[in-house]
Image 1 (spheres, each protein chain N blue to C red):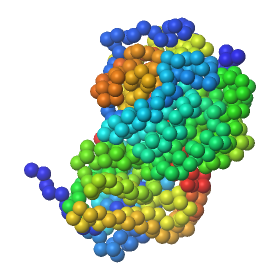
Image 2: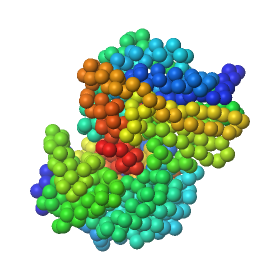
Image 3: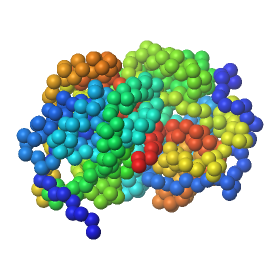
Image 4: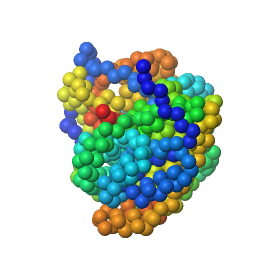
Length: 320
Length: 267
């Protein structure tokens, strides 16, 4: 049913081409300006859902990357202090498939703000209660970013699987009742002109489960992984070149301010997880020294939209 | 050889005036009665409130040391927006409306004055080296909220910029954090609108340095908010802005608030 949804962008050359070929010497490099965001691939590529648009094809049987342990996360947290990290993000796969997730968040919230990107299908009341306890004991914000990709069960479940809409909405209701203001993220599958209408529909749907002050975040499609098979991937011309970086505010790009800790080393950012070119080293200290290379076509989405995976948009400006 | 930094014992500091000339006058009067050595304004003179030109003679007349915020930078240079970075359509609508009003009604000589302001101020408070900025020492429009700013991040920022104490504003909600022997960050609050706390008062900071001891008092300022609301209505500013002045709850530009700060508000 995934194909029933409208897609954005040109219908490209197909899933294999989505990975493209490395642009080689043409690919610009971006050095780390400051490690503001430390991301954790805390559930590896393991997910209880098998979404038709997942940019890294996470699934119950995708074990390319495994869960991070609490002690692995703790070691990176310790290292992050001297690096001056400002925010911590947890993604997967589905983070709450990691049995140590609550402990990991407890450790993190002692140091700084934590954001979890979740499908919210594994958040029973006892987990929500535990999260509320962690949030209330920390001076820092605990943000839950809940992915819902349609304002109806029909449209969401076509992408995310049968029953996922009702389960996620139920969790949003429980989170709201516990004092959270979850950020509901949705991939844009509509024309820009329809944005207000779609957002109004989302607000009404969320209000119906008791979430009145909804926070909504629209994400552009990343045409890699499963999404490339669904929507056709990138056109050959959609690639970042050196010329495109002339006078471009580089701090808009996540790779200028973030690194991703995984079970197999440290990567540039979450969207490059499937690409060996995204791997920057075995350790955080090594990975912060190496620049990112904008080799992959997914970098074009970031170049166009900025670091949309952050909670708030990048704010690059030249104050002369 | 660079000039020695000015040394103070006690200062008052505020930011985010947002054209609220009534609160500005009230805060200066309050601070002056507390025997301060200097009054500092950390930027963003316009936005939100009515008749932006009114705050300039008040600031200059009282010798307030002013630095340039992101809004001031935009107005001075006639940019397209206020550089707050909103993406939510509703927030953007109000931010645009407010910015266009302010830009159109700020006199050329005042825009030139904004352009002449420094981006940061350094001074000594007792034996402490203080760096006053708008958002953060590294970026004028960086938001440093209490719930999303780790202590180790602040300590590194202070070290990178050779300061014991950092003063900032930009978010509109005052808070403070201490670390080590004498490290401190103080968000000095904003005079232009209440701090999303259900109170109509606005906030400034009173800071005193004695040796390496820093004392901080966040001071609420009552002013004739009803008169400001009337003036805002006369200027056809949005009723949503007026509501904030009258209730103390933010109604717009909520997207940038982290979960904890937003949950404390009404909207």
